[in-house]
Image (cartoon, rainbow, N blue to C red):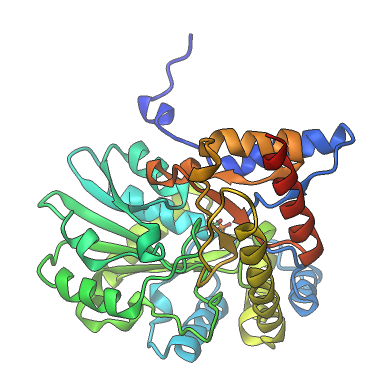
Length: 390
Ligand SMILES: Cc1ncc(COP(=O)(O)O)c(C=O)c1O
């Protein structure tokens, strides 16, 4: 009998991947499945970005690169942050990693250990909790509520800080709810954090360009009073439809850059060179494709909310960002997991139970609307038929 370290048994998973596997299995057996489970844009990576990746390979970029990423890419990230958010970032603080998730992994490894406490949003991206448990730190959920449109409140975070708190994870716009934390709450939170100078913040802003109704993104990088302890997580996966390229970045406080770079050297060495060249093209090239994608998501958002509110037992808020709707399904009388299973097995619609994102997700379902309007309408019709037949 092998004896893997106990920490490994504390790792959880992302059920979007298991639902995807089951959906694929059902499809292989001839069933028609509409996948509203997986969180990835249903668009192709824009052609000029693909071309830059191909060109990099043709030009002979086949070897290792610096562990923190090639300099022109880190410079392009800094320039993009300046252009979009108006913040000055030294490219030396940018660490390029294979996907948004890796910055999360590094940040939690850097602050998580037995005796430490880490705050995270619940419902939230499931990997936060998984990594905190893995690290041995105590995972402290900050509940997000439908009554607050799934935005974080400063009070909910600040009231949970103890002398053991090392790191707070924030995510806006949010997975799985599409909730956006209002600027006034971020202002209050930052003001409150001034009393806790040893607490670091991981701000997951991977959906920062997917905001609707003319909302502007509030980045944690905007706040000078906490600038020395904010880790920004962002990447190319969602904004440029590049989930499979595995490309992301962190902006680290100067004193943590070396630690993040060593974690990179110790794990993946560096990100593949062609993806990094594609990443430059994405940031410095035309942004029309981003605008078109966001406009498409915005249009679908209205359709999905209208369709879901017409399902008996469902009640759905209009999400402010990302590409997820998070309907309240309590009145169906089914648990989130029962409904996820019934919809996949009987209606051929893949969704994700709210409980996959934390205990506070009970009574909700995550619906990704990164799918065509026709499919969204057809899925809603199937859901209605399934629930009416119950
Ligand atoms: C909130 C959030 N952060 C990070 C990630 C990870 O992104 P990547 O695929 O680039 O690792 C995701 C992906 O779903 C996400 O939803």
